[in-house]
Image (cartoon, rainbow over all chains, first blue to last red; front, top):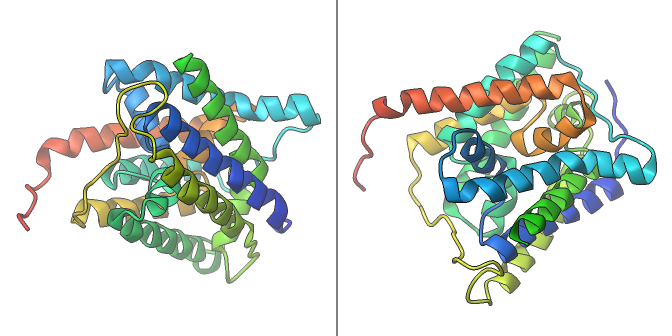
Length: 143
Length: 143
């Protein structure tokens, strides 16, 4: 399905994402990596870290509701793939992001900003495999 | 105070995710679909986030410590190994199949869409698989 090109909203949203990452570094001295934060909270990896991780996750979940409260419109979530693809993709995302120690937020936003060599390798790797996967799914299988 | 700070940080980050279009799989998948219904918006998300984080991190690191104590915990690894590349490659494949990544799906949960919950449960399964295979991974090659 076609989507509308939104350079200004996307850039503005990106600024806020970056601001969130900077706030977490300023306040708690941590990288804003969704994979580490989520798996740390799920598996109680460190008791001392649990409370701020849960508070951060709660804030993230409240965000679309806050936007709805202010604008009256819930942010769009259009899912053009089947439930089976969401489930399979999710398992692969969880396995891959934890093996690779990061995802779009940890390696992408925070890692590239730090000029981390690991992130400079990781980001083009996952961008490339995502693009290849979308090409195969849409143009080879024609889903 | 620390937890309120973490909550607000999550709210800022999540609002950015929502406004930017990152939580909309249709937009995410179109970003990768250069050969089809291409929507380059998400390049602007990454651009905005990197500008703020690149500058913001360097300002924050002028401090001796984070606001709420402790120290700045910054990953300092530089080894490019099979786990990093293979994990990142897998992550991209999953992202390209499902259209969600963890940092986008956590805020998207607030919209109440069941597909998001399905994705996050699947991601948790992926995290768990990673923990299952952890004892069997080959020892790191000395470099």
